[in-house]
Amino acid sequence: MKFILHITRFIVGVLFIFSGLIKANDPLGLSYKMQEFFEVWGIDWLNAFALFLSISIITFEIIAGVALLIGWQFKSFSWMLFGLIVFFTFLTGYAVVSGKVRECGCFGDCIKLTAEQSFLKDLILLILIGFLLYNRSKVSSLLTPKWSIALLVATTIMTIWIQIYVLKHLPLFDCLPFKVGVTIQDKMKIPADAIPDSTVITFEYQKDGKLLEFDADHFPADFNDSTYLFVKRYDKLIREGNAKPAIKDFVIITENGTDTTELVLNSTGKIYILFTKSMDEDELDAELIQTIAEIQKMANTQKNSFMVVSSDADNLKSVLLKKGLILPVSKGDLVSIKTAARSNPTLFLLEQGKILAKWGREDLPYSLR
Image (cartoon, helix red, strand yellow):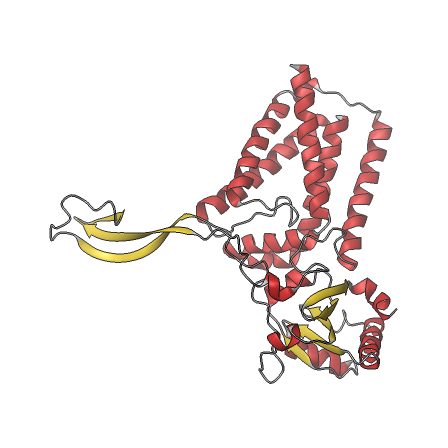
């Protein structure tokens, strides 16, 4: 029994550390996934706290994983992990039943799991953590309290530092569709080997006050009976495919409403594009304004184009004007920009739609070299 207990403890601990480190690579991604749930539940006032909650959950996952491996405060962490996995199981179960959230972000964008796969994973973890909780009194710490606390403090500092770093720069491992080397217009197409959704034509009729549903191959034997009242016909999803482009809704609309997406992506010259969701006056500090002005000057010197694309174009242009920077600001889709720009802002260098390079906010000065 002790061998099984220690193996289970090792598996659960390593899995939580692995899961936390993958998400620590892109805490913004988890915060966006949390906002999906908030909006579905009508509690989008929590969106402002999504990033803080994301960093906290990721940090706790890694700390808890380390604590399990060394056996420190095993009883307390067993209870906390059990509560956490019950919550995760509820989330993934809700995603499966409701169909409103297709991916749960359990392993970030690097290892994508469907809602069903995430739910199954959480059910297995629920059983394993339940087993650890039941046997919580049989595990003792491998290290002294002093060394255990030191290790967990170091783990906390490292985890938070990684997340702050990638928020200022960009994810260390780019698993997003907009990574360097990708040609955007290619990712906007449905892959040639994609599997389409499997659907069946379904009919809904009413009979004797009851709603009946059946497909074209399973009409009731007494269907000719005039008591059947037609309600509707629809395509029922039997199996979800993957016939979806990796990049959706990527658009660039100029200030006068012209769609220049194709023109930008097919341009033979190099184009610098600064993507940002939105930025207020506090975020646009003097140093950033100067850097943006220098990037524009560099692009002009190289005879390359430079443009700013924001989901909040009108407001951003107004803020730039207040800061003394006159720039045309095009409008882009918010979801697409959130995917492309994990740092706010993010600078891209494109040539015929191919991403040659990109820089996060703290790396913008390096784009001038």
